[in-house]
Image 1 (cartoon, one colour):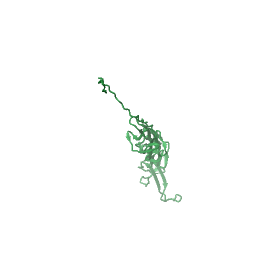
Image 2 (image 1 turned 120 degrees about the vertical axis):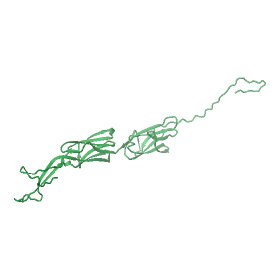
Image 3 (image 1 turned 180 degrees about the horizontal axis):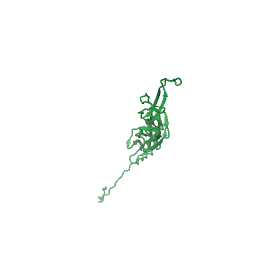
Image 4 (image 1 turned 60 degrees about the vertical axis):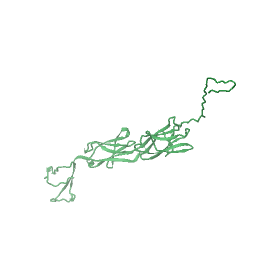
Length: 291
């Protein structure tokens, strides 16, 4: 700026000088980023580190994210796979807290939940993540393979497959009320599929009986499902001969009529019955009861 001073002699410099005044406002306190928040399981008030659970399928669980660090007070948000979750936020002298309710489900098994704390638009949010661990009921169980028609005395492998249990299902086989032991268990597909197999030697008494396969989650006693098949066992005819029920063997006299009952068990049923007397064939027209 040029300043002309009136004196007896007028002097005005030909060079102008500019002065720039910069006003610096008072320094504002810098934001202090929050540290990683803590996550607490509301059921037992214990801090959750790494994973929460195992939670029983269908159970409701409350998780609280807490932060007492940072200035100004940070905002807490819950996330799953990039999607923000509904939450309830509370403020207290101890800091800020955000609570969510988790319903343990098959879809949530293995999911990662993240709580973020942020109090400015410059730094990245601080975060803490946990994994959900859910106990799952078996979804299905089935006796697989060719059970079909069996032969008495000939061993056969029974195979049963259970899907969806976590931890892997325990498989047992039952013949009526009797447990079939020595089951071999194989776990596949990251524990999602469990196969049980057993070598079974049927007898004629198993014809028409049911064999059951029961799958149970070993940590959930009520999570039980089963499958069953009816056995068809082929076996050679077994014959039993008895005196007529109305006859007294001690009172039979010469000339009395005597009859016998022939009981036959066979699968498939016997198509022909031959009577013998002292190795000699009797006429085939004589009555016979087959069963």
